[in-house]
Length: 79
Image 1: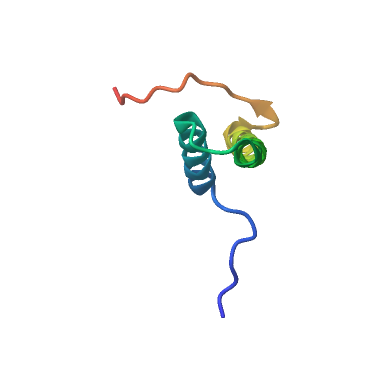
Image 2 (image 1 turned 60 degrees about the vertical axis):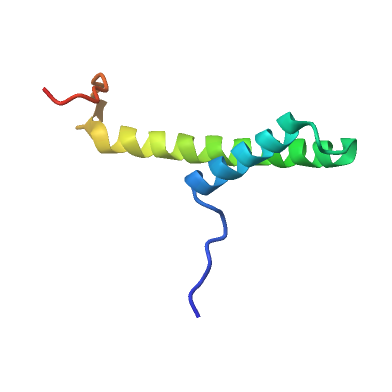
């Protein structure tokens, strides 16, 4: 039997967060449901931030040369 991931991936967490925000913005939730959604939203936000921080650390490690960090501007367009 394949093992399941313990934590969802970034895209899934972000989609769940967006869904919660939409539900809360619609105003159809009870006060208790809104508080639960808000609490879940905070949890998802923290998870996403942690994943982004980890990705940033990986990028720094991959772009470092001889213990020196080389920073370059990010350019989407290829010249």
